[in-house]
Image 1 (cartoon, rainbow, N blue to C red):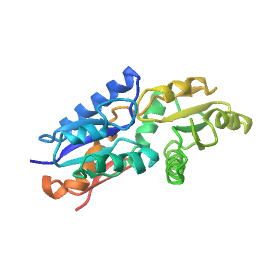
Image 2: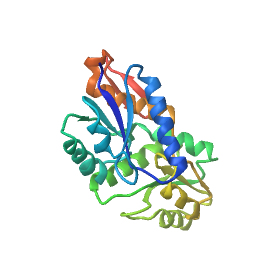
Image 3: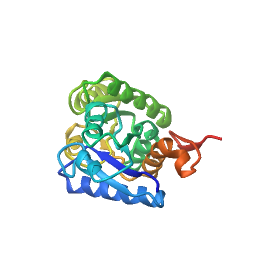
Length: 239
Protein backbone atom coordinates (compact mmCIF):
# COMPACT_ATOMS: atom_id res chain seq x y z
CA UNK A 1 0.00 0.00 0.00
CA UNK A 2 1.31 3.48 -0.81
CA UNK A 3 1.96 5.86 2.05
CA UNK A 4 -0.94 8.05 3.09
CA UNK A 5 -0.71 11.73 2.18
CA UNK A 6 -1.44 14.27 4.90
CA UNK A 7 -2.03 17.85 3.87
CA UNK A 8 -0.75 20.07 6.66
CA UNK A 9 -2.58 23.40 6.65
CA UNK A 10 -2.46 26.44 8.89
CA UNK A 11 -6.08 26.35 9.99
CA UNK A 12 -8.79 29.00 9.82
CA UNK A 13 -12.19 29.69 11.32
CA UNK A 14 -13.33 30.92 7.91
CA UNK A 15 -15.98 28.60 6.49
CA UNK A 16 -14.77 29.48 2.99
CA UNK A 17 -11.19 28.66 3.97
CA UNK A 18 -12.20 25.29 5.40
CA UNK A 19 -14.13 24.56 2.21
CA UNK A 20 -11.02 25.26 0.13
CA UNK A 21 -9.06 22.80 2.30
CA UNK A 22 -11.67 20.08 1.81
CA UNK A 23 -11.84 20.75 -1.94
CA UNK A 24 -8.06 20.61 -2.20
CA UNK A 25 -7.94 17.28 -0.38
CA UNK A 26 -10.54 15.88 -2.80
CA UNK A 27 -8.67 17.18 -5.83
CA UNK A 28 -5.38 15.71 -4.62
CA UNK A 29 -7.05 12.35 -3.95
CA UNK A 30 -8.39 12.38 -7.51
CA UNK A 31 -4.89 13.12 -8.83
CA UNK A 32 -3.36 10.24 -6.83
CA UNK A 33 -5.67 7.24 -7.18
CA UNK A 34 -5.08 4.66 -4.49
CA UNK A 35 -3.54 7.14 -2.05
CA UNK A 36 -5.53 8.04 1.07
CA UNK A 37 -5.51 11.80 1.65
CA UNK A 38 -6.05 13.38 5.07
CA UNK A 39 -6.06 16.87 6.58
CA UNK A 40 -3.97 17.86 9.59
CA UNK A 41 -4.13 21.37 11.01
CA UNK A 42 -1.11 23.23 12.36
CA UNK A 43 -3.22 25.74 14.30
CA UNK A 44 -6.77 26.83 15.16
CA UNK A 45 -8.62 23.64 14.14
CA UNK A 46 -8.67 19.95 14.91
CA UNK A 47 -7.74 17.30 14.17
CA UNK A 48 -4.26 18.67 14.67
CA UNK A 49 -1.48 17.27 12.54
CA UNK A 50 -0.28 15.23 15.52
CA UNK A 51 -3.76 13.78 16.03
CA UNK A 52 -4.11 12.89 12.36
CA UNK A 53 -0.71 11.20 12.22
CA UNK A 54 -1.36 9.28 15.43
CA UNK A 55 -4.07 7.29 13.65
CA UNK A 56 -1.92 6.44 10.63
CA UNK A 57 1.03 4.25 9.81
CA UNK A 58 3.39 5.26 7.03
CA UNK A 59 2.51 8.77 5.87
CA UNK A 60 3.96 11.70 3.94
CA UNK A 61 3.16 15.16 5.25
CA UNK A 62 2.93 17.79 2.52
CA UNK A 63 3.07 21.32 3.97
CA UNK A 64 0.33 23.31 2.25
CA UNK A 65 2.24 26.51 2.99
CA UNK A 66 3.79 29.00 0.61
CA UNK A 67 6.91 29.82 2.64
CA UNK A 68 9.08 28.23 5.32
CA UNK A 69 7.84 30.18 8.32
CA UNK A 70 7.55 29.04 11.94
CA UNK A 71 4.86 26.43 11.34
CA UNK A 72 6.86 24.72 8.61
CA UNK A 73 10.27 24.83 10.28
CA UNK A 74 9.16 24.18 13.87
CA UNK A 75 5.55 23.06 14.34
CA UNK A 76 5.35 20.46 11.59
CA UNK A 77 8.57 18.62 12.52
CA UNK A 78 7.47 18.71 16.16
CA UNK A 79 4.08 17.23 15.24
CA UNK A 80 5.76 14.40 13.32
CA UNK A 81 8.00 13.68 16.30
CA UNK A 82 5.10 13.83 18.77
CA UNK A 83 3.14 11.32 16.72
CA UNK A 84 5.94 8.76 16.87
CA UNK A 85 8.19 9.94 14.06
CA UNK A 86 6.81 7.54 11.46
CA UNK A 87 5.80 10.21 8.94
CA UNK A 88 8.07 11.85 6.40
CA UNK A 89 7.98 15.57 5.61
CA UNK A 90 7.81 16.62 1.97
CA UNK A 91 8.92 19.94 0.52
CA UNK A 92 7.00 23.19 0.28
CA UNK A 93 4.49 23.78 -2.49
CA UNK A 94 4.97 27.56 -2.69
CA UNK A 95 7.86 27.88 -5.16
CA UNK A 96 5.80 26.48 -8.04
CA UNK A 97 2.74 28.65 -7.59
CA UNK A 98 3.72 32.07 -8.93
CA UNK A 99 1.91 31.38 -12.20
CA UNK A 100 -1.23 30.59 -10.21
CA UNK A 101 -0.90 33.97 -8.47
CA UNK A 102 -0.63 35.60 -11.89
CA UNK A 103 -3.79 33.81 -13.01
CA UNK A 104 -5.75 35.06 -9.99
CA UNK A 105 -4.44 38.57 -10.60
CA UNK A 106 -5.61 38.47 -14.22
CA UNK A 107 -9.02 37.20 -13.09
CA UNK A 108 -9.32 40.24 -10.82
CA UNK A 109 -8.62 42.63 -13.69
CA UNK A 110 -4.88 43.05 -13.15
CA UNK A 111 -2.04 43.50 -13.30
CA UNK A 112 -2.57 47.28 -13.22
CA UNK A 113 0.45 49.61 -13.31
CA UNK A 114 2.27 48.07 -10.34
CA UNK A 115 1.65 45.18 -7.97
CA UNK A 116 2.06 44.44 -4.30
CA UNK A 117 2.56 40.75 -3.54
CA UNK A 118 0.76 40.37 -0.22
CA UNK A 119 2.05 37.56 2.00
CA UNK A 120 1.14 36.58 5.54
CA UNK A 121 4.55 37.51 6.95
CA UNK A 122 7.14 35.88 9.17
CA UNK A 123 10.13 36.67 11.35
CA UNK A 124 12.10 33.97 9.57
CA UNK A 125 14.59 35.38 7.08
CA UNK A 126 14.19 32.39 4.81
CA UNK A 127 10.43 32.96 4.54
CA UNK A 128 10.92 36.66 3.74
CA UNK A 129 13.48 35.79 1.10
CA UNK A 130 11.04 33.31 -0.45
CA UNK A 131 8.39 36.03 -0.75
CA UNK A 132 10.93 38.38 -2.33
CA UNK A 133 11.85 35.67 -4.85
CA UNK A 134 8.17 35.09 -5.63
CA UNK A 135 7.69 38.84 -6.19
CA UNK A 136 10.61 38.91 -8.62
CA UNK A 137 9.22 35.91 -10.50
CA UNK A 138 5.75 37.47 -10.64
CA UNK A 139 7.21 40.70 -12.02
CA UNK A 140 8.70 38.74 -14.91
CA UNK A 141 5.38 37.01 -15.59
CA UNK A 142 3.17 40.12 -15.52
CA UNK A 143 5.66 42.66 -16.87
CA UNK A 144 5.08 45.13 -14.04
CA UNK A 145 6.98 46.21 -10.92
CA UNK A 146 6.08 43.88 -8.04
CA UNK A 147 6.86 44.74 -4.43
CA UNK A 148 6.73 42.13 -1.64
CA UNK A 149 4.76 43.16 1.45
CA UNK A 150 3.32 41.55 4.55
CA UNK A 151 0.17 41.39 6.63
CA UNK A 152 1.95 40.70 9.91
CA UNK A 153 5.39 40.23 11.52
CA UNK A 154 7.42 41.97 8.80
CA UNK A 155 7.69 45.18 6.78
CA UNK A 156 6.67 46.82 4.60
CA UNK A 157 3.01 46.35 5.39
CA UNK A 158 0.72 45.86 2.43
CA UNK A 159 -0.92 49.24 2.99
CA UNK A 160 2.45 51.02 3.14
CA UNK A 161 3.60 49.28 -0.03
CA UNK A 162 0.44 50.35 -1.87
CA UNK A 163 0.93 53.94 -0.70
CA UNK A 164 4.60 53.92 -1.73
CA UNK A 165 3.77 52.75 -5.24
CA UNK A 166 1.18 55.52 -5.59
CA UNK A 167 3.71 58.06 -4.36
CA UNK A 168 6.13 56.76 -7.01
CA UNK A 169 3.59 57.66 -9.72
CA UNK A 170 1.75 54.39 -10.34
CA UNK A 171 -1.92 55.24 -10.86
CA UNK A 172 -3.48 51.78 -10.74
CA UNK A 173 -2.02 49.63 -7.97
CA UNK A 174 -3.00 45.99 -7.63
CA UNK A 175 -2.58 43.60 -4.73
CA UNK A 176 -1.77 39.99 -5.61
CA UNK A 177 -2.71 37.66 -2.77
CA UNK A 178 0.12 35.31 -1.87
CA UNK A 179 -2.28 33.36 0.30
CA UNK A 180 -3.62 29.87 -0.21
CA UNK A 181 -7.17 30.24 1.12
CA UNK A 182 -9.75 32.76 2.35
CA UNK A 183 -9.53 33.84 5.98
CA UNK A 184 -8.66 36.76 8.23
CA UNK A 185 -5.58 37.78 6.25
CA UNK A 186 -7.38 37.69 2.91
CA UNK A 187 -10.21 39.78 4.36
CA UNK A 188 -7.76 42.50 5.43
CA UNK A 189 -6.64 43.07 1.86
CA UNK A 190 -9.93 44.75 0.99
CA UNK A 191 -8.88 47.69 3.18
CA UNK A 192 -5.33 48.44 2.04
CA UNK A 193 -6.25 51.09 -0.53
CA UNK A 194 -5.49 49.14 -3.71
CA UNK A 195 -7.47 49.50 -6.94
CA UNK A 196 -7.93 45.76 -7.17
CA UNK A 197 -7.15 42.74 -5.04
CA UNK A 198 -6.85 39.21 -6.35
CA UNK A 199 -8.40 36.22 -4.64
CA UNK A 200 -6.27 33.71 -2.73
CA UNK A 201 -4.77 30.98 -4.89
CA UNK A 202 -7.33 28.36 -3.80
CA UNK A 203 -7.70 25.04 -5.59
CA UNK A 204 -5.78 26.00 -8.71
CA UNK A 205 -4.52 23.12 -10.90
CA UNK A 206 -0.94 24.14 -10.10
CA UNK A 207 -1.63 23.67 -6.39
CA UNK A 208 -2.83 20.13 -6.99
CA UNK A 209 0.20 19.46 -9.18
CA UNK A 210 2.54 20.93 -6.57
CA UNK A 211 1.11 18.71 -3.82
CA UNK A 212 1.34 15.66 -6.06
CA UNK A 213 4.92 16.52 -6.98
CA UNK A 214 5.95 17.06 -3.35
CA UNK A 215 4.47 13.69 -2.40
CA UNK A 216 5.98 11.95 -5.42
CA UNK A 217 9.44 13.32 -4.62
CA UNK A 218 9.31 11.34 -1.36
CA UNK A 219 7.72 8.12 -2.61
CA UNK A 220 8.56 8.07 -6.33
CA UNK A 221 9.97 4.58 -6.39
CA UNK A 222 7.22 3.14 -4.20
CA UNK A 223 4.52 4.40 -6.57
CA UNK A 224 6.51 3.93 -9.77
CA UNK A 225 5.90 7.59 -10.59
CA UNK A 226 8.34 9.56 -12.73
CA UNK A 227 10.59 11.95 -10.87
CA UNK A 228 9.11 15.44 -11.04
CA UNK A 229 9.68 18.98 -10.04
CA UNK A 230 7.31 21.95 -10.00
CA UNK A 231 8.14 25.06 -12.00
CA UNK A 232 6.24 28.29 -12.56
CA UNK A 233 4.44 26.66 -15.47
CA UNK A 234 3.61 23.39 -13.77
CA UNK A 235 5.24 20.00 -13.24
CA UNK A 236 8.24 19.00 -15.32
CA UNK A 237 9.06 15.31 -15.50
CA UNK A 238 12.71 14.41 -15.22
CA UNK A 239 13.90 11.55 -17.40
